[in-house]
Length: 278
Ligand SMILES: Nc1ncnc2c1ncn2[C@@H]1O[C@H](COP(=O)(O)OP(=O)(O)O)[C@@H](O)[C@H]1O
Ligand SMILES: [Mg+2]
Image: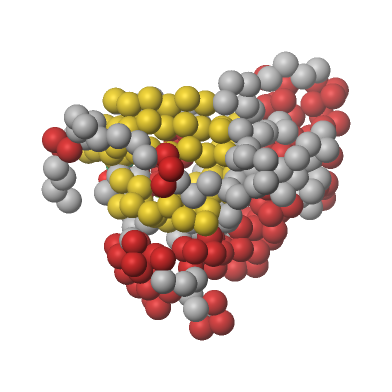
């Protein structure tokens, strides 16, 4: 796709944070976890993100939607610190613990339990405690029976649950998910999704903490409706729409203010979802 690279970091462009879909709460918005100011990310010759202005608040569940190549993975990797802006600025909430899940989780060639425990041990936990915590995390995601199996022999759904266990055990404040159910069958999709819901709403955080901040990319608009509180639509590296989930899917706002996003959603809903979800 041909791109107009000259438009990034355009002089005079300003972030209009008033436009952002702020969560409505009585005593002001919750603390900002990520603050992006005109961020551009160049990958090789491609501008994967352009002039992104964005504030994400603690406890939000933010869905990233858009066609392949629109910049969803790049934005997630930027938030996780795997990429830095080429221009612009990102400010992260200082001591936030973050975990990220990918479409295909990376598994070490060892038992499921060690896959969780090793991460905790590397982060400084004593081995015995890491093993205990890992067993608890596996129990939590329904993998107790396969704790001693080589993680690489597990099914795709089990591996993704194991990746969630790994994330859960590290007790993150921010959870980033890049199409975590895209390569799973419908049953495994439901299992992983319901674990994400419990995780994201803080129902069972090991420390009893409040909800985590969730940012996830998904092509499954049913899943977006079920999980998100806020939806961002990306196209060619730009955030073209930013709305609370209800306004994104219902009412005239999307069509009136964000026609490109409206056509994307219409196309996806007609082409992808089973009739009961349209
Ligand atoms: N490592 C890379 N090198 C060069 N271009 C890349 C790289 N990774 C992604 N891109 C390009 O950046 C753009 C955004 O990609 P990506 O963030 O993966 O989109 P999405 O996750 O929405 O499919 C695409 O045009 C893609 O081809
Ligand atoms: Mg992607």
